[in-house]
Image (cartoon, rainbow, N blue to C red; front, side):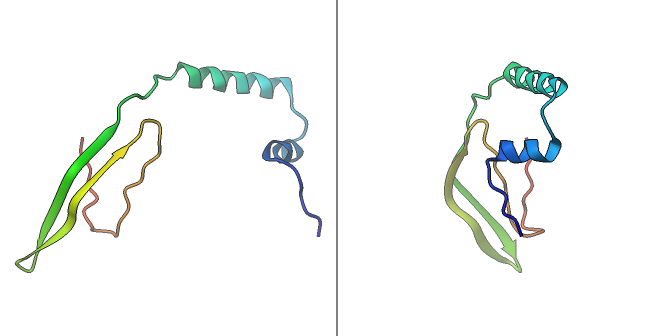
Length: 90
């Protein structure tokens, strides 16, 4: 068994073959498109968030004084079990 050594770019070139002019032009178009995108500057934040549900007539506190934020340009995931109430509306 032979180990592969090299960085990701070298591995990609080995897998796809030598770079071509078309590949370079495509890369330039992608870079230009990324620079033309509007910059995200808004931060979504929340403070002192509480959330309670009623289960069999009993109130259960699911979120107790939760604070947080989502920074611009960052991937954020809302996770939880199916049916846990992960409903977002904007």
